[in-house]
Image (cartoon, rainbow, N blue to C red; front, side, top):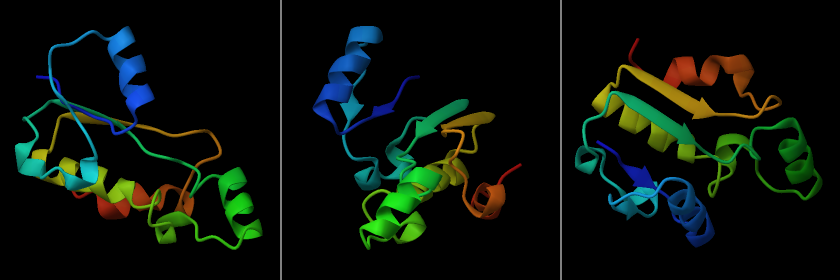
Length: 116
């Protein structure tokens, strides 16, 4: 079963150009109840790394903007991934992260995702 969430129209166009599909692409994942997501064995997720990356944090600090989980527009998508993982408990999951993107020396995932 495939499930896709994306809100950016250009990202949706690119996705469909590369992976033609007949399944629905839902919008903003923050508005999607986890019980409405089909059961799955693998979850592949990505979220903006700017609130956590070395370069992103430096830029946000220079502009006086919040970063990490205090960045309410980008920093909280992690918690949507965690709630979906906690509800569905897939066999495996993969998250997109850049090399310089880490939070609390990798302890964030360990502390917020409650399954082995």
